[in-house]
Amino acid sequence: MLKFDYIVIGSGLAGLYAAYKASMRGSVAVVTKSFVRESNSFNAQGGIAAVTSEDDSPEIHKSDTLIAGRGLCEESSVDILVNEGPERIQEIIANNMKFDTENGMLALGLEGGHHKRRILHAGGDSTGRWITEFAISKVETQDNITVFENTLLLDLMVKDGECYGVRCWSEDKNLQSEERGSEVLIYADHVFLTSGGASAIYARTTNPLTTIGDGVAIAYKAGCRIVDMEFIQFHPSGLYRKDSSQAFLISEAVRGERAHLLDKNGKRFMVPIHELAELAPRDIVARSIFKQMKQDGRPYVTLSLKHLDREMILKRFPAIYAKCKEFGYDLTQEIPVAPAAHYSVGGVLSNNNGRTDIKRLYVCGEVAATGIMGANRLASNSLIECLVFANRAIEDSVKDGSIKEFPAFNVHYCRNEQNAQMYADLRERVSEIMNLYAGIIRSEASLKEGLKQIDELENIIDERCLKSDEGKEYYTEAAHRLLCVARLIMSPALQRKESRGGHYREDYPCTDEAFAVHSVQRYGEEITTAPVNSNYFNF
Image (cartoon, rainbow, N blue to C red; front, side, top):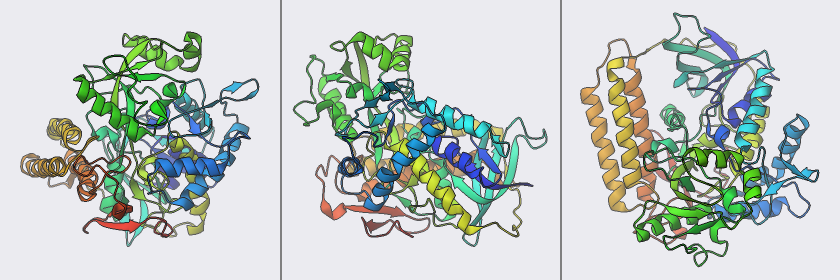
């Protein structure tokens, strides 16, 4: 049996930072379904938001976060983020994290929804890669951290409301040959779920294709409350490519440097819509682009930088420029963009120390619902949330101490490769359903039709999958998790009869204060709601 003091599921910034912090307290297993360098954190371009200048303050940062969150932010959580964020930034700088500077000072960018320049960046437009590489370098220096790549979380080992470890399917090259391609049980005193969001469940996404919300589904089935899953943030500007559903992200920082969004006639359409024009909060910009695309009869709008200084663009956005060039576009001129699913605002309910409803199970990063994002994440708050709440969770975990005796769990997963094509086909179909019926603009009719089709797919799986007498079948269970995530998004979206943040109903286009509540889903129970700022997150 494999036994560690800590297990960290996921290798984004939240997971890597948690693993590094945990290594100061014991042995750590990092489990990632693909590779350490494949995550939303690694791909993040814009930057990390924290107060570091004298003309800014935590109060202003808090105000911007609350405005973007559309009335659903938990103020106590936001207070933690904006006040502890600068501490975490100073900590990683002291540990040799290099952010971009200008004249010896931190270079600060501006993004949508922010009223001050507070976005730290590294490598121009490669902040995610730089800060993730920084975290990886710290992990690699710790002899008591073991990384399991190509290792997929199957389930949590929970008994009587307490988590004792995880079930994984592993192809990791460091395992013994007889252990590869099979279920592996890993025990630990503390389990950290940092598995990311669910935006790759959509057909057009900026996320790695592995980001399909399976961590949320697993936590849900284990008994955790799931909060605000209807709020999906669509990034306004994914590079449009006719032949691909993968949308290369064009950072909001590009608009922060005064790039313009143009309609088919070359006119700026955001100016009359919002006082911040192209720098309005993401939900407004994404929805405005979507409507403009329909009005223009084109699957994209134009992002223009040709009025900006070419050398500034090349210096500030070298990676984006190179990628656009690879696809045949010149970033210094005009490029086609369209919205793409980008960030899951909701997730597994977490208190201010990362605890969940299951003892010894913590959540951090995009998989967690801390109450900070409300109905719509403020740009660049996600990376700083990873640092702040991973740190708090590790500090809190010592309160539980070590497990003296672990209960026995049996291996009960097998894999039938004849079901692999079924799962691949299902993923494609589910992504189409999500785009069609639960995308940027929704309605009662569309959501009901989407849920109906998900139910039909569930029945097809149960009828056609090749079962096994040996236990749960890998692809069949993965299929059920995928459908579970689709329902977790669409069900509360159907019940929320208003438009707010990342949830827009064309049949209820206005915000209704009767719905200024969190949606709550728990396995085996009806959907309920919880009031905002009521200590619901302080359990």
